Image (cartoon, rainbow, N blue to C red):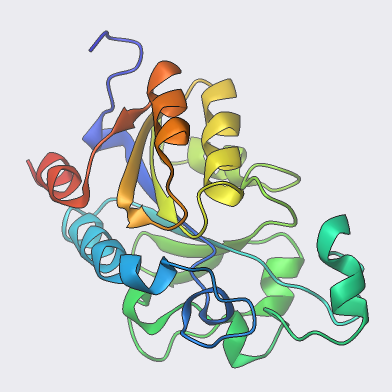
Amino acid sequence: MDEYIKPRPESSVLLTIDMQNDFTLPGAPAEIKGTAQAVPQMKRLAEAFRSADTPIVNVIRLYKKDGSNVDQCRRAMIESGAEIVRPGTDGAELVEELKPSPDVRVDAETLLHGDFQEIGPQEWIMYKPRWSAFYRTGLEDFLAGPSVDTIVLCGCNFPNCPRTTVYEASQRDYRLVFVPDATSGIYKQGIEELENIGVTVQDTADTIGWISD
């Protein structure tokens, strides 16, 4: 692996994408197939990053009741009364397995204001208004603080938010690690395309070994 794309554990961050109850729990209003099955791997990743004292940013969505901040393709559904990741509801919360402590709750007011919510040592929640974690957010500036140059990414529904976030991170010259067994919605061609742009694709066990060395 050449020097320009080789990921660096000492300057990395773990991004989890849209790991909220409404997208994850069986029978939830916007359940994404395969997300619940990927949670154990995500939990192991988060625990490994905490043990390594390495930053974690949990990226989430929040859909206001009036639909004013919702993607165009979902806005009519929300305006018609669908309650999906609505601020203040249990459905908008991080899945329990990823919380650093059981008493963590999403502070929607802080997040919708564009601020990062600290939920533990080296761990935060942030809100994104669209597919990419970089679109109209402060993520790039935030990561400059701890001098992050490597992003490790997992989460909910690869074709949409994880995939878009990977490409936007690549445009910003981050070194990238993608963890497919800790992500839902995986498909072969998409993984091959990531590898073709220099993304390191490795499973949870290998990523834990890498961050723990």
